[in-house]
Length: 402
Image: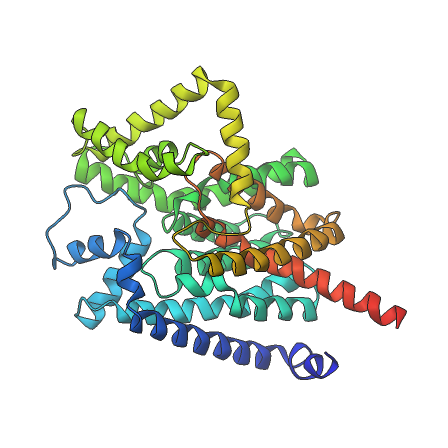
């Protein structure tokens, strides 16, 4: 380990970032090549974003309603495909490899801003380079690569402004946060949890001032998107119209129920004449979820607590093979144990408060809405930083007793 520290963990920061970025990029390019060569892109399918992008470019029939999903990833796909004047998604996947590799130096920088220290921060960055979850979703046409990149940029700049007087720069960070919410809507409510932890740490006045300026910028992108949707559809859609569907779709602890529910929901929506109106369809299933909670509070509480625990399960469900599930179960179990130990070491440090707010927010959100291990990916950079802090502490303790 001494040789590794000398050559990797203790080298010049810029040189480390360049080498780590190159390593992560090569790894992602190789994995993407293997993924495509084996035809796994067809096996795992595509989210709606790619087809929406084709319709925006006029290369496919226009959607009757295109605000079911947040628009930023669709816009990215459309921009890249339009630039190359081809529907071939390969340039998008190559860009995702670059974005995924860029998360490595961003993790190092974020770790240092969190006070993890240079060595732990660099170890966390290298960990992110080989993280199986982030690798697996790089060659897929989903929001993961873009969202995690944008989230890391958000937190790097959020920490740059955390101890400064609220001003234009903080509002700019808020704008970036609002754009991140237009990539994936789950981050949209984070400022409310951030306000709560800052209130506890700094007092009401300072917390309110900080989050008010941040919130002004945060709301701006969604406001523009809402205006666009109102002009086009005469309906207000702040971010996306699928939230009600996602709420009822995953509101169960029974795997078989969750497998069958989308088909049952489709039949129900069709019978009610809601298939052509995504907003009304989302409202219907949101009301159905809230009615179930009000009518069955005990059962609903059990589901909510169970879903919160399932959000932190170490292994994925089928259709992954038993070997893959077992390997990932071991990997995440080790990561969680080390991260918990790292969290104990930094728990009293106020600089970590925004991170705890993010953990609490996403756990609470996915205890209501549909959950999957892919929705925990935004927390993995923080988990790797915490685990790296733990490893460095264990190594220091071992050296002291040697």
